[in-house]
Amino acid sequence: MRIIGGVLCTSEPNKLRTTSKLHCPSCGRTAGNGPNGVGTVLYLNQEWCVRCARSMRIPSGNACILQPSLGRMVAGPTTDPLDAWIDCYVMTPKRRIKVDEARREIQRAWAMWNGDKGASEAMFMFFGWLQRHRPYFLTFRNKGDPWQRVHSWLIQWERISRQRAE
Image (tube, rainbow, N blue to C red; front, side):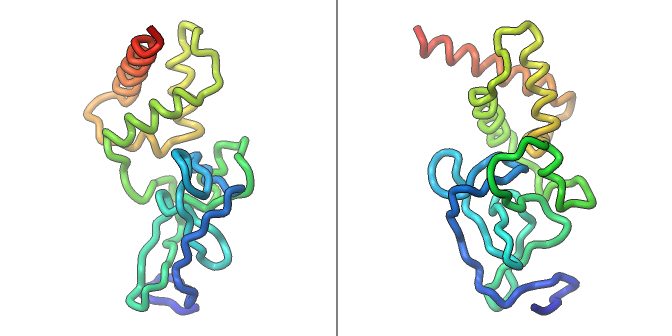
């Protein structure tokens, strides 16, 4: 290990891993391939999500994870939403999610959400779930209230789902 520019870096080469039992509490994806899969980087004997972790490459080609950082992979799905921030002292993601990507991820999360979607305030309850369990999905650029945009995306998803069912 050595320090480069104030960052602790390993001498291990960057290794992409695909251990299927690891989950990222920040984005909710599992390590591996598939629609819900994500690659991982091994850093200091710990797996990190390549989508969420604040990583950088040093001139030798090795990977570093800048600390504090989101994206530490944990064994099994987590039930505590604060696990996403366990490695952070500052609650800021490495980047904002793009609006189009946020729409896709939020609609995917809505489709997989096991709450009562028939309740009158189901979408609002889901928004609260997003704030607690998937805060990264709400970091998209928005001039107004993010709830308004998320609500419109969920209505759009429901309309498209009904049309497919007919």
